[in-house]
Length: 311
Image (cartoon, rainbow, N blue to C red; front, top):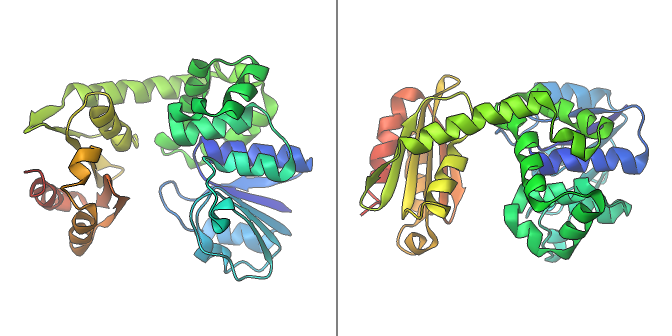
């Protein structure tokens, strides 16, 4: 059995579809991890035990790949260490200092197969910056897709993971393989899901309060939208930063703190992350972003720490 493990977003799904087409696979199983968790869970390990060959795409889990005991092709574009496992062929331009905006582009170059899925992977990972690349525009033009349509397709494909539907993410690969990309623009299950998510984001944005140039938003939703809400508040509404709380996300609480590049010169996110971890939360991030998942009774303690850095 050929087993494909891929990331849950558009780039991961597009990369999986490209690989299936490139290899002409007629029998395969594609799976993703629990959404939001960078690990192989028990379900994945059981599938790996039964597989003859494994493909890991756009899923930055080198420590997990080190442990596999079957021939594996590991294609990615994220920064990661070299794999020591002799059963693994690791294809990643970043190992030699290269930068690729998406895994789909790495897969396409490796197998010499380029189509609209390649472009959608790029758009999915870097948004409108993808249109600064000639290859993205060329591939979209060949398919007769506008930039707006490409952004809409990413929104539709991503609706599956934003809704936290793991099986729908896995099913999305088959949808890409079976339907033309223009058909996907009217694929009803995704359209309905995307509209529900859009409504949840708009409701969250409408409740934003401003404090000293920072936006504060609180809501309860089963949709994983905190990063999208924060990004819009900072990038489109030009707040100094945004603090977004989802107080009931499948029985947990989420906090997301995004700041503008100017504020990143003042606020050291590494210190924020360290303090949130001391509370026993699952926290991480980068220079301008902190994301946190915790028990619901800890979210006010999380908020107090974040508020200390707002000035």
